[in-house]
Length: 458
Image (cartoon, rainbow, N blue to C red; front, top):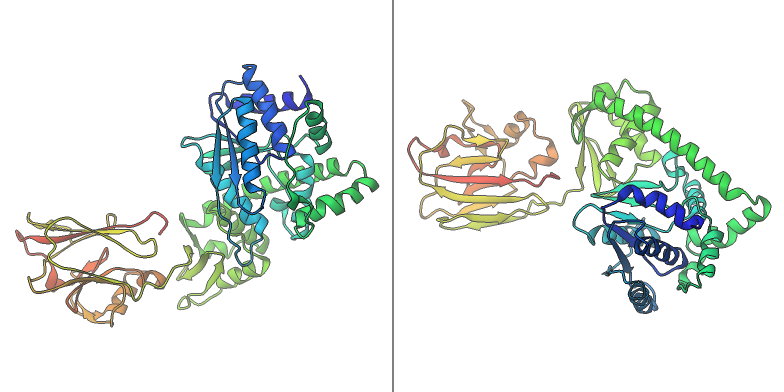
C-alpha cells in the first residue's frame, strides 16, 4: 500500500461506522482523496459509508462544467454525490475567500443529518500557506497553529488526513494512477493572498530553503502546543470569572494581568463562535473594567457586542431596533401564536377559563396571567412606551415604568426588548416580569394567559 493510502487508512479507520463526507472540488487534491478513499472502501479496508459533496459557488463561468465533472467521477467510482448550490455575497471587512470557505463548510455540514466525518484534501503545502497568511495578518499562537488534523464543526468532525503529505506527493499519486482533474483558473489570480503566497512566495522560499515546508510545519506545531497551554489557563480563569454562560464578572477580571485578560476574552469569544477581537478592541474592553457603575459602555465585535452593566460584562447579539414594532389582537378565543421580531421568540396567548393560579409571573417560563380585556378593548403588544406610572403586583406604591425596570436590574438593552401588553392605550403588563395590580386576576375568575417562548440565543 502506498504512502497516501496508508496515511488515509490510519486516520479514517478510527471512525468506523461514522459516515464519511468527502469535500470534493474536482481539483487534484480532492481527486486524489476521492480515488484513494474509494479504493479503500471497495477493498473493504473501511466500513463507513462514503458520500461525496461538491459545492457549487457559482463564482466561475466553469462552475457547471466542474459540477458535471463531479457527477462523472462519482458515477465512475460508484459513490453517491450530493451537489450543494451556495451563493456568496460580498461583505464589508471580509474577503471573498473567507466568505466562500464559510459557505462551503456550512454546505458540507448540511449533507448528513447525523454526526459525520468531513474529510478534506489539505496537505502540508496548504499548511505552510495558511501559516504565512496568519503571519501576514499578525495572528497570535492560535492563528499560527494553522490547520488542525482534527477539529469540531458543530455536530461533525473535520479531518485533514493529508497534512503530512506534500503537494509533490499528491501530484505523483495522481500521475501514477492516470487521474484527471480540473484546474480552477482563479488559482492563478495573485490578487488573492493565498495564490500570491503559493505562486510567488513559496517557490522563492523553497529555492532558498528546500525544507521550508517542514520547518513551517514544525513551527505551527509549537504554536499549537503553546495555544493548548493558553487554553488550559483560560479555562481556569473562566471558572473564576464567569457567572452565566454569556456573562463575566468584573471584579475577578480586574485581578488578571492584561495578558491573561486578553487571553480569557479571546477564549470566551471563541467558545461562542464570535469574530475575534482586535488588539484595539481588547484595549477598549479592558478599559470597561474601570467604568463607573452608572455607565454602560459597549464594544462592537462583528455581529456581537460586549456590554457592561453594573458589575458584569455581557456578550450579546447586535440587536435590531424593535421600538416601532407592534401587533394588535382582537377577541382572543382560541390559542393565538405571535412571532416577535429580531429573534425574540414567540408569544402564546389564550383565554383560560379555569381558576387563576397563585403565581402571576413566572420568570423561568416567561409566563403571566392577567385579567382579560373587556369586549370593546383591543389587545396590543408593543416594545415602546411613554413611561407611564404603574403599580406592579409586588409593590405598594406606583412608580414610573423606567424606574421599575431599573429596580428589576434588567440591563438597559434588554429593557428595549420587553414585550409590553396594552388594552387600548392602557399599560397592563411587562410580559415575563410583572402585571399591574389593577389587572391582576381575581380568584376563581378567567384569565388571559401569555407564554413567552424566548429563543435560546437571547
